Length: 233
Image (cartoon, rainbow, N blue to C red; front, top):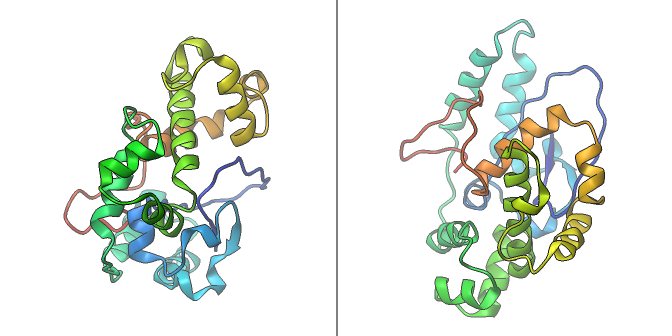
C-alpha cells in the first residue's frame, strides 16, 4: 500500500500486469483522514501501509488483500466505498477555510497570492501555513499549478489538441507556459504531445476534473456519493 503526497512535478514509474486501486484525496479530505502535514510528503511516494498517519485506510488494504481476484471490479469498488463511509472523520478548526481555499484555487479569476489572501480573509503568513499543512505547497506554487492544469485540461479535451488555444488567460505568452510545463512535467509541450499515453490520458482527465480544472468526464469511475458523509471529500 503506497501513498503519493501532493505533487508539483510528474512522477514516472513502471509496472507489469496488475490491478491497482487508487483513492484520491482533496485537501479537505487530507485534513479529515490523514494525521500528517501534507508538505512532509509532497512530491514523495511512501509506504502508507507502515505509517500510522494513514491508518484510516489500512482496512481498505486488508479488504482488497482478502478479496477474490475473480470478483467483479464494481463489486469490490462498492465494498471499498461502504467501508470508507464508516471511517471516523477528524474535525479541525481550519475546516471551513480549507474548503474555501480549495474552491478559491479553482477560480480562474484569482491570479495571485494577494487576491487569494483577500478572498479568504486571512493574512499571508497564515495562508502560507494553511497551504503547507493541508495542500502541501506554498500558495504561489498552488496557483501556478492550477493555471497549468487548466491549460493542460483544455488541450486534452480539445479535439484538435492545439496548445495555442488551450493556454490559460493568466499566461503572458507561450514561452511563459513552456517554462511552467518543463517545471511540472519535466519535458516540453511538444515532447508530451508526441509521446504515447492512452492510459495516462484517462487518469489525468479524471484528476483534473477532481481538481476543478475541467468538467467531470463521461467515463466510469469508482462509485460516488453525494450525501453529507463523503469519505473522500
